[in-house]
Amino acid sequence: MGDLITAKYSSPDIPELHFTIDVNDKRYQTTNGMTTGPSEHVLNAGQIDRDRPSDPKLLSGSSSDVEPHYTELSKLRMHLTGLQDDINIFLTEQMELAKKKKIKLHSEEEEKRIDEEINELLDGGDGDEEDEDEGK
Amino acid sequence: MRTLDYTLEIRIPFPEERMATIAQQVLSPDPILKPEDFQVEYLKPATQHNNVLLVKFQSIDERVLRVGVSSVLDSIKTILETMDEL
Image (cartoon, rainbow over all chains, first blue to last red; front, side, top):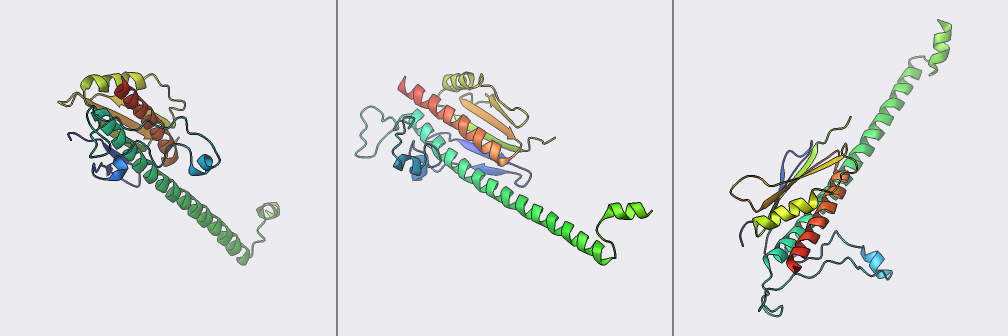
């Protein structure tokens, strides 16, 4: 096997991350991705997946019973399917992290605001700036 | 104004240069709905590997990147499937 697909990701938090393919790993030997197509729930409810990708194409003379030999384009499609799963899983994890970070930041801001209000009240203010302005 | 700080580059070596060129021509006309949030380029780097299609994505966050990348990869898989059948 010659040249393989590669991918490179970067973001403000991750300067560089490389994705590579292991041709011996089962996830790069299928045209059915784990993260694409209808969910299991939808399929169990009776939906038929009409957009399902075709199986990889065998080279003429090759048999799927013994060690199958696929066309170069099928191999490329299988590798891309596995890489798509890797990228989808990674980005979903990153989305979750960003969501948690946002919630934490929001709760920290809220906590800071409450602390400031409490401190202001303890310092003798009544928490109502308008009244203070009227007195001036 | 948010910047497109989230990037992904995918290097796809096709079996032949002609196939990489066809894939580039098939993918390029697709318009980007929100170019301020997501952008994609299909390049054929002028190196010794003329059979390579380089796909460059830029996005404002992980969520938009995931949706855009997966959609483009689905299209590339369909192109590969079609080429394999013809």
